[in-house]
Image (tube, rainbow, N blue to C red; front, side, top):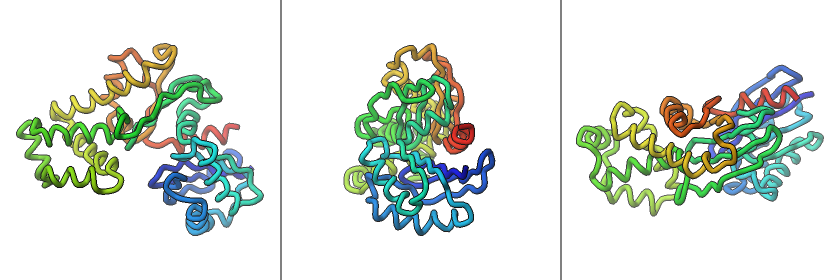
Length: 281
């Protein structure tokens, strides 16, 4: 059986082409979020970038997990585009949260979370998602995410509450005025990406007490509003994927222990776990 497995965000898609228990090929294309791209545009991109990577091995089964694919009608947009290119393949499209749960928990019960530019989480019984806290996006939620961390940092800057040494480092890296920040947040598209960009600065200055406090408080909010609201949360392991969880894993483990939650696997991306999940079927 030749399988094509994909984990897609809004920016990029990781692909693995497998045969039985072997990985034949791995590559990346642009991301395919059906909230941002229609079926025609997705199809055009897949023909341009995906087809050349699969000419030697036509997939018989496709497992696509993507941001924006949790709703059935949105999953159908991506599914129809894939079927137009691989009409003989069995195509399955699911949301990125189920992909994260399968990658992290495999066939065991647990809690799974995505901590990247945004955040999301779920309760998983080893087969399906049985609980999912609302993912409110960067304006109302996204606790524990790069955007949430970046927003906390920029708020310190705007309110002139950043300690002198950190402020000097910040302005050397980002010579911004208050007007510049407000323009980016309120006038320019995708302000969540702008705000999440400051998370890297926090990571690079994690020796500073204010940066430690920002990340710790963001993780505490994530546990309070999401993880601790799941039934039997303290009896199940929590597994995390995403760049924020991965790069701040030491702090994440500290806050997890503080909250009485057992933190298990932490990965930067779910694609390796998804490949293992489907190869093992």
